[in-house]
Figure 1: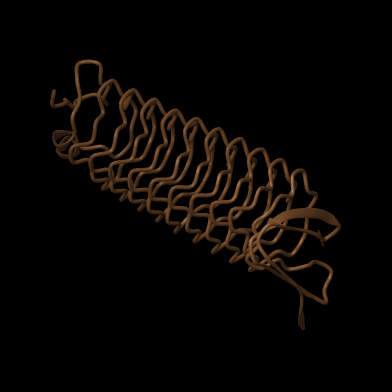
Figure 2: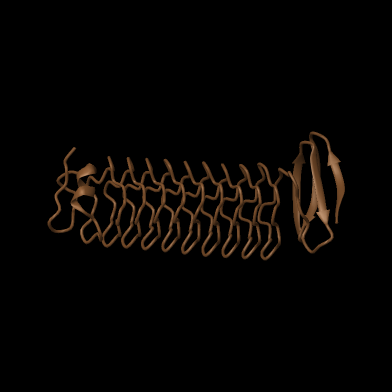
Length: 265
């Protein structure tokens, strides 16, 4: 059963224990509640918990608005349904954590490890994952419109059925990643390593694949209208047809499977 501990006005400082980690927060009418369980539940809290050790903790449903958890460790933690809006997790470790259904909109995960984490169904519009590690991460059926994954490592990640309108995926390493049925309209995948990736039934209209490495990638029924494939290496790409290539935009440096020709534009 939850009990209200404190309601503190503007400018006050709150120090609370979150599963053994000290949280210091400049408070703006902060409300803190806890449950009589191993882990405290923080509701609508914006504060600082740099370097916190929260591995294996149950933080499901927590709301951390504008909080700073830089370099925190949350290995294997449960954050299902959490709201981490505009919070900063730069350099943190979420390996094997479960963030299914969480709202990560505008949150910063730069240089963060999310390897083998579960992010199924997250909302992360405008979130930053620059230089993050998401190897074998499940981030399927997610809303990632405008998210930034520049230079991230996404080897074997599962983005199936995710919405990635206008997302920045340039210079990523997403070999063998699954983008089947993903919506990638207007996304930037230039200079990406996408060998063996699965784009079956993906929507790539207006996307940038310039200078991307796509050998052995699967394009069965992928939509390529106005897709920029200038300088892309599609040699050895699977299930790629001439009708698909006719809708894309390439140049003399575009490498295609034998028998296919590109429209120059």
